[in-house]
Length: 464
Figure 1 (cartoon, rainbow, N blue to C red):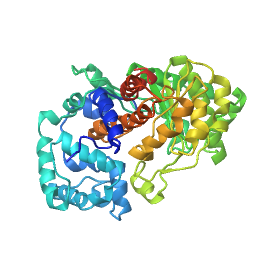
Figure 2 (figure 1 turned 180 degrees about the horizontal axis):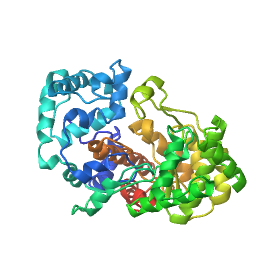
Figure 3 (figure 1 turned 45 degrees about the vertical axis):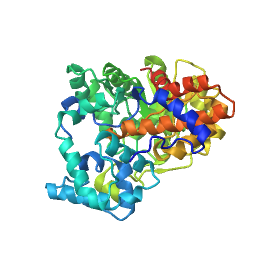
Figure 4 (figure 1 turned 90 degrees about the vertical axis):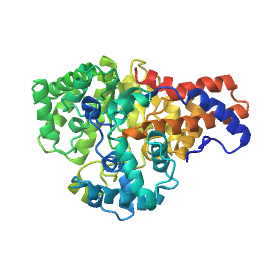
């Protein structure tokens, strides 16, 4: 079902070069430094229960497409587990009936890869073979070879980072660390629930932060000390990075007095939208200062209007496929932070964007100058063949390859991780093949770059 030259250039000469480059990197270990898989899977190592909860309900790439076709989330078992096997099969059949909707999307590439490479199914999913697919997958999931740790090892994952709130106890990570399994699963510090005054339950979250750290968080100074304490706790559980999903990359640098006054407003429920935005902006600068102190890499990925569908948000909560990209600006927004810390090589900030218009105009020039900045890969809506090609075309000439950080898969869908990395490696090898054919690179240089883009850049950038 899967063509060996899929996603490689159509031109015979380019394809030959790309094929050679790909052969050199296709079996490299996977570095997965930014993702959202559940650490409980690897802590408990219980079998995955069924095809629906493996492929559909945790993957917003999948169910947002189905929702766009008028399929309700309830009918997909989201918001409440289906009561019996018949319901699960009905959901799977519904998925198969609409599988053609994924044609031309990266989800189709990932899913076909998983069906073929992981489960050995050499057919396309259709309504006619939906039950056979379900049986094959369901039977495989009962085998020890398909438990989470076995798949982790089979996928040749060297390190996988999950993402947790600062209020998480990290019990699953502790259990993994105490086990005899040698798979490396680490956490990432995602402080949005206690940095964003517009996050639901923000004031209660602050109080919980104080309880966890046994710190008085009534003052801004105490609040910062509590954050430092949690960062230390996360580092003890393997974290090398922080992750910030702010609406915009705006930064400011306020005085201590201004900080204290603003903190009181946002924690006492008197904050305006501008207060919330100002607090987030200052806290990005504070997080950069803490990253210089403790060495954690800082990831900033703004530009998403999160939970745009209020009906779904009110009923089902966050991450229901209704996050929409927005126009974003970086040059002026980041200047207050960069004025303080941009020239400090101890700081490493990885910038992501959903606004591709900023690649060549803003992000590549910024990363091509400041020692503290690097560019994250094409991400989320642009984690796709054309998105990856656009990223390389628009950033390389200004920022170079070595001011980027390779690839990360940013997924909740565990089984898609090798599929996503394979796609990225094929696209990068195709891009490098073009540079070789144009005599911009020697083929030996392209082989070195293919290795860096597939493996070493991510490992170095995330200090792994």
